Length: 463
Image (cartoon, rainbow, N blue to C red; front, side, top):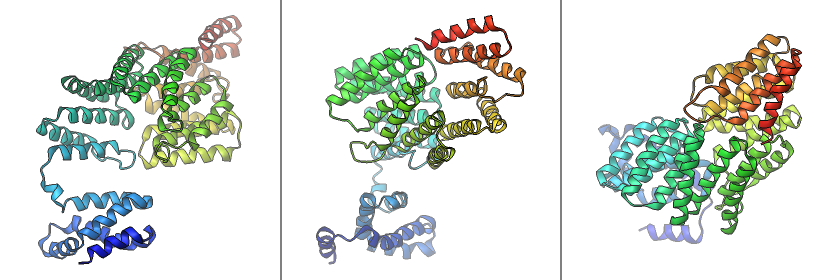
């Protein structure tokens, strides 16, 4: 009887979201009690009666909170999940529906950290297989691979899921999906340091995406190619691929989109590698101010990396300690919120760099050594090299009291950079290690050997 009145008021005189909060909390708490005690016969009847009598109200309140109350988004999503257990939705035995649910949970890892991702992936695969939904299964395995790249950084596992996705996409003769998967494979193997395979997969992704008309996959392929050539020290070739991608984005009128921000971030990386810190700083500030096409903020992980990049640039530009510390703290809080350990390690490294600039050499050294020990033997070769680049740098005064230790770390850095690997090596780090070793030789008075080593390093930086 009251439904028409409720709908009229909601449409003509919608109440403010803040006013509705106490009412929502009442129902949120009721759903929480049902979730905990609903299986107990002596208690469940009272909960069920109240919930069933207010299904319409609960549905509208949840919808209103989902759209208009971002401060309570986490509680709202949790209540929606609890509410679905009472609805007919949970009784449909719709495998595709449950597969989609698993995929969305996996894709939302930045906002709702997963306690057991592997179980969720197995559930999703089971539902898609039960429904014989090849296209859905291909998309699910692509999402699973992306999760393993982004969160635990298990690139081998990611490629395993990407390969499953590619096989299913080929069975479906879905060129669009194949382009996306090849692009994802190229990015994963690039992160492993396998540049030849990354370039081959990216080229195939670009070819298929142009045929399929998928501009997102096309620009993603260009991005991987740009990243590979950047790591190889060929900045002009890297910039050419980035410019091709930016041209596609400009033609679509998507300036200010997340994709636009991605390539702006690449320009930041190139400027930092060329030691053009003022330019990198200006672009990072622009990146932090950018909005996506839907008017929202950057993704948490992108925002956090931009903040920590800002901190690094500020240290290089001799900004006040409190300014740098503010950027580090902002990045750390975001990485902690999304439980991203690799990002937290980057924050620790940047904090150690700040200690170094503040003259706290012993603390900086302890942090560098601790990070190297923790990462030695891990799959994150790139981060290990970044740590060694700091601890082995003879110009940063980390080992001011011991030339022997200084030489030790320079040799470790060079050996690690040159270490035989089944994949390609980052040439810039090799030349950086040569520079550190040359500096050590110069400090020891071995001028001729130092000159030859530094000349080899200079050749690498001049590509």
